[in-house]
Length: 442
Ligand code: PMP
Image 1: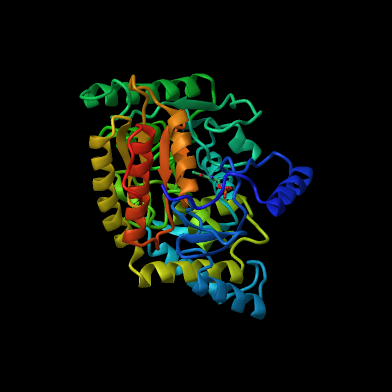
Image 2: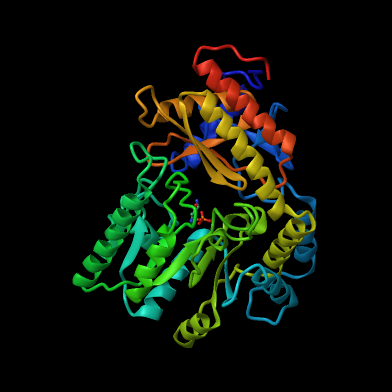
């Protein structure tokens, strides 16, 4: 593996680390053993303070590439003209809302703007409570939906001191690639759906009722499990029968990330009542949203004013609009599907050749590789070593899942095919090196 950077921290970086520790402290731990001090970016590449270039196969916020000139210029031009909140008549927000809503299927035809995924999910919870008169929530047992107090009360996939709410029930997402699970999809589906029935009954018995099911359509925090056919549909059907709403959190999976379709749920059999958006919408300019139906929006608005100072300003709308135009003009949604199929085939080859690579996960430009130990159990330590080997070779990835043994590969949609091949080649070499076999220099 060609080394991109030395092991030790540069003197200037060490000083910055010390100043960071003395001000920001440990609340947001830095990535990688040797933290990266990034100073610029372009397309799928980022550059550190020493001038080393890294291929970014991890960041899903710069959906249309780091420092995208079209987005930067659109925001800049709007900031130089006017930037006000949403209680004035303003064309940019309406133009953007119209284009954004064209990417959704009927009856999803209304949008609230927010500044983040957390704000979007927080609003979705309020909407679900309003629409159902209930408070009960069903989430998965390894999920993350945001940083507010009500979202912390249903967070299961990240350390928070807030206890799980009385009104929250968790379900386990089945994975056909999970340990010892092969060959029994029917049983697995039945057991998983029975767990939802139990969660619903428990919420009803406790008097909470069912306000909503809140899930990511591809279960990314859970490690991109391969769920049995009919699972999502079964979940949605049961929750709706109990009077609850289906909320699809598309903060990670949305805006073409999974390829072929604009939104993750569009490739499934579920039609959510509410879809929450965030991360990639503004390519780094804070922008999120809650997409729902006319009926829901009118009903919620009849008793709730929703005002959010920075959400949907003309500058935010300019960012969002430029991102959509880039995706449309460059055909990035279909391209993510094509590139994803190529990567899936290549990851499948790695699974065939490397005993420690157990399963290729995901689709579009959001994929993973599950790593296991010699006994077939999840191997988070191996995943950590591979992530570090890749960053040492100039490629940024991360890991996910309850055991953190699934490599998480999720580049900006503008990444080129040969760049993706490089990611897989270097990964291949790192797996060979782990097995004590020298690889051809990549
Ligand atoms: N939902 C999901 C699925 C997320 O991954 C995140 C952020 N990691 C959020 C919601 C919260 O988004 P934000 O950080 O913009 O508040």
